[in-house]
Image 1 (cartoon, helix red, strand yellow):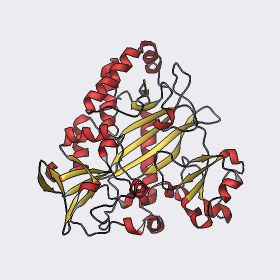
Image 2 (cartoon, one colour):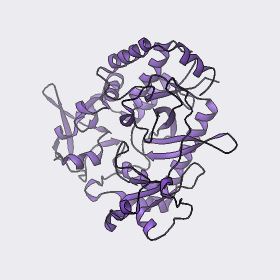
Image 3 (spheres, helix red, strand yellow):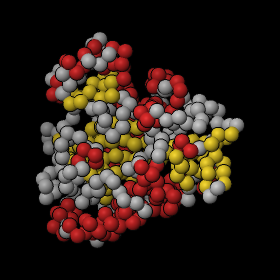
Image 4 (cartoon, helix red, strand yellow):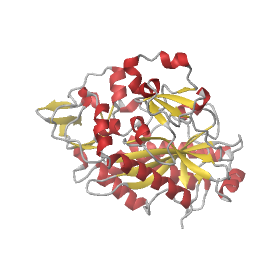
Length: 404
């Protein structure tokens, strides 16, 4: 949307360059990327990116600085996944925004959701860089936020993920990682940080220590970069070699409790111009705290609190849809104001919407810091790359910004 970058890119685009982009990304991530890569990056102003980064930080602190919210979020922690030794803040934050058009023609950010869980910090760095290299874009364009560059970004990421440990004793923990769509991201950490990706089901517990096997040797684990999502553990009914409640002698890079504490559950507690109105479904049935929620069903979304990649979202839910949810489960759903995002990215296939995720790192003893952003391009109801797999000029993209 930022000119003249947008028109120049569209004019010089060729399918051959896009094919080379995909080829180079597969090579650099040592795998075949299974999700759709958008043909184009997005060009945004520094003013916009700074506004989004500031809004996301404000929302994050609004939650963490509230004793009432932190007390309320205790209810989100499932008893069998309540991990000891929770740290004072999450190491990772992601805040997703769309852009809406105001009556005066200006644009404003609107929150989609926020999550205290890692995103694709490794892959996204490779993607942004490859857009510039493959398409011969202005080399002064940057994808880093808050004054970071390549060196300081990876130093910060190393500080958060590895800490003071030998990388041999740090693992990226995931469920069946070789079959996750985020495997390209895992490979980048292996290459850059020299940590090992480990299947959570293949750990071994001895006393209060965890170990993984490499080249026939058992290696003690001192720190875990946690990428395992409890929803998937439950869905697959996996039997693990340890209990999350065990007092393990291990550090967590991304303590698992934060996945629950800051999530869709947080939306009704936030007060900010960027936040659409949202209430818990049980509150809607009792008409509690529903002021400001649209009455028209076509203006509402029904969201399960604990799902991933947009699973289970219903647009314009009917009375029958809402009544069908058992009363005992209604606190596990949100009824939310639906926001119509402006299709701002001009493509050969028509204007396209952009959902911008600001990704933050928060090292121990440091401050919450916006690091970079990723973009998902889509045309239709759902923005996730899975929902746009059969379209062109949509999918996983990057936010490029002229340096000041």
